[in-house]
Every structure is written in C-alpha cells, then in structure tokens.
Length: 449
Image 1: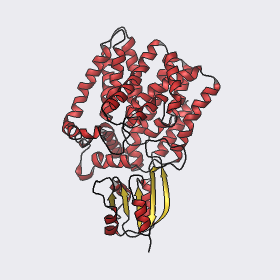
Image 2 (image 1 turned 90 degrees about the horizontal axis):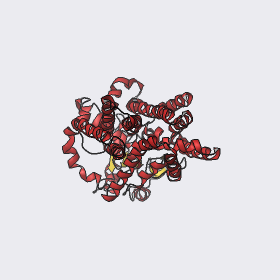
Image 3 (image 1 turned 90 degrees about the vertical axis):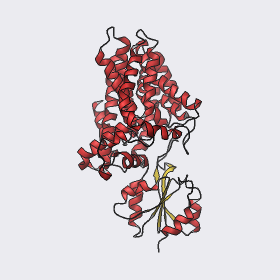
Image 4 (image 1 turned 45 degrees about the horizontal axis):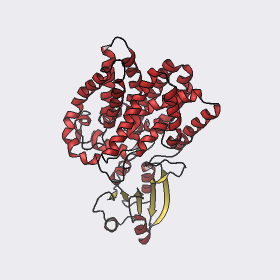
C-alpha cells in the first residue's frame, strides 16, 4: 500500500506540472494573484461570485510564494496534491481500524486508484479540500457517536473540519448537515448538532467580509448558462466516480448494509448530506456539477471497500477495472490543453492571434509578452464576424467550439482551415476515449499568407 501511495504521489506531481485549465486560471487571476500589490489576505476578503474557493486560493497563494521555484502550475496545485494524499491515507487507516485490515487495504486501493480523487487533487481548486474534510469527518464523527465522555478537543476538531470545508466550497455545508441529521438518531443527539453550530460560528469571520458579494451574485446559484440543471450528476458519486458511477451504486448500498451499525451511522452522514444537497437542487430549480458533492466520496469509498471484501474475485476485478479505465484517461488526456494550444498558435504566426472562448482572455496567461486578441462568445452581444474583421488574424484558437455557435461555419467561409484539434476532457459528461469531447477540445484554425 505504501508503494501504491508513492506511485500515486509521483503521478500526481507529474500531472501537477500540466498547463492550467479555465477555472484554475480565472480563480487565480481574480482572487489569488499578487498583481496590483494584492496581499495574501486579499484572497479571504474579496469574493465576487460563488465560484471562488477562498481557503484553497489562500493556500495556493502561500504555496506560490514559498514554492514558486517548482514552477507556477505545480506550486499552485501543491496544497491540493497534499490534501489528496492525506485523504487516501486517512481512509486507509480509519477503515483498517474500524472494519479490519482487509477492508483497510481495499479502501486504500480504491482511494489511490480513484479517478475523481486523482483528478481533483491535481488542480488548483477547492475540491481536494472538500474530500479531505469528508475523510477527516469520519473518525471525528465516529468518536462523537460512541464516546461515553465527550472530549472538547474532538468537538472542536469536528467543528474546525467543517468550517475549513465550507471555507473551500459552500456545498461542503451539507457534509455537516448529513452528519448532524444522522447524529440526531444516536445516543448523544446533541453532540454533532453542537459541533455543526460551532462550525457555523467559526465560519462566520470568513464569510462576513464577502456577504455583500454573495448576495449580489445569488442569481448564479439558481440559473447559469450551460450548467446541468437538476444536478443529477451528483448521484454518480454514490458509485464512487463519474464514468461508471451508476453501475457501482449497488456495491455501495451493499457495503453500507454489511457495515457494523456504528460504522454505518458514520458513513451514512456524508451520503445523506449528498442526497439532501441533491433534493435541495431539484426543489429550488438550481444546478450543481458532480464535483460539488465530493465531500461524500470518502464515505462512499469505505462502503465500496466493505462490499468488495465480501465479493467474489470476479466482482473485485470488475470494480477495480472500472476505476482504472477512467484513471488511465485522466493520466493520458489533458482536462483542457490551453497551454499547448497557445504555444502551437504563437509558433505559427507573428501577428496577434484571435482566441475565441467563453472567457477567452484566460488563455493570455500563456501568451507571455506576445499580444493576443479575444472574442468572448459568452457575452450576450457577441459578434464574431465583427471581431474577425477587427482582428484580421492569421490563426484562430477556438475554445469551447460547442458554445461558439456558428464560429466554425464563419471561419470556413472566411477561408480558414482547421489545422489541428487538441483534445480535452472538460465537461460534465464522462469521457471514455483519448479523443476527449468537443467541450474540452480546442480547435486551431489558420489562414496564413
């Protein structure tokens, strides 16, 4: 298991050197960058939309300051890589202590080969901290459920874990809600409720400076273009991953049923929180990406491991295989090859290229001191023809070709040729091939003189 963990770290550090994708660049430029003399504390006191993950941005800023010599990408992602490794280690140890060494090893195996855990531990966003909060909450909730005498240290640790989780992503609040709801059915119904209340108090200083920003952007929680309405993708996490999550949900349910009563109560907390989040999304007409429920992934992996410990060899091989296939694609296919596409573009023209995207200017981070022009198809008044006429580019870098309606036809009419497609995995739908999908791919068009 230690060798598997070491291999995971090597792969994670290698992926950490890949180019940044849209959300990483946008969050860093808006909240974390030291540009314009911003201090590190600026990350925690300015919040323009719910897409910011304050504590993760703060951690990336500190890491960038201390470990920038490793390279910007790896320095920004290093806190998340460490959080991911800690998540797997905590699950391995706790499951081994509570369910036996065999289940502990299987939990570690599932954690170190889980495609979602690897993917979200190798990007500079708050999801790795969500998973870490979910993992740490399991042994802490276990103690609060079973200890005859309450220790203030356990209660405070539980509250701090929830506060840090919420500080990295708002939906982690449902982790606390799930644990609290299950706790109300136990011998000490007030303990987890008290821990959650204390977590809310600890979170208040973080959210107080940005209450106005949250209020002004509340409409983004109810309606955003291109988002998966209803949040049904959240339920994939009940199977432990996106690609084959629906197929593995029965294994999770079986594992929950076969856990001891005490362990089942603990593991059910995050899972119940995920289900409550999904119900809220549906009832409020809101939206959610699958990754918004990652706080429940650690609990699901424990349940899957318990199920595998009782399954025949063929069942174990199937579950592990369904993890390894998407894991291989994550290793082989970039999420969004912005860096590679920009370098390809700049090598082929001396004129400023035109980048088309929902927020195409994020690609400028890899342009260095070269001038780049942008056409933002995410704006309501987008006029691609006018942007082409004004820019007169030789090379067009088309990001989000599925969202840039009519751009491909316009480029063909203007004499551009599609020279190259760089594949990516960006998007909510699972990717099963090395060709990725259209949303994550970047098209490179040329009309060279």
